Image (cartoon, rainbow, N blue to C red; front, top):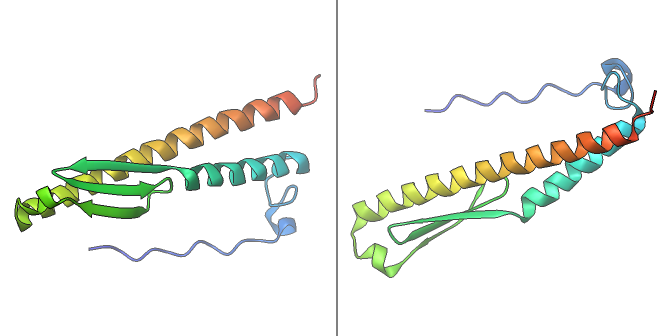
Length: 126
């Protein structure tokens, strides 16, 4: 049983949100552009990633954004009967999803470190 997902709040125009373009107080426009470039770069990295797991002859594959791409059931898995196939599908999906989530987290952390390093390198020296 799932509860309905609330839509995101409407975005505010930059002036109403405060700060430089995009409503990020304390960030210079060049910092915002850099952050947006990194967001796009991260999106491309995630789109290029895939994660898969096999359980009982069933292979599940997810993309780097956590969406299922494919489930392949081998002939050997079918020989185990419907209940066994069902269990294997569930396990393969769970494992592949977990790998996808780990991959997303690792990529986000790596990109965040890269962004912070670049922001620090470009910060004015006092």
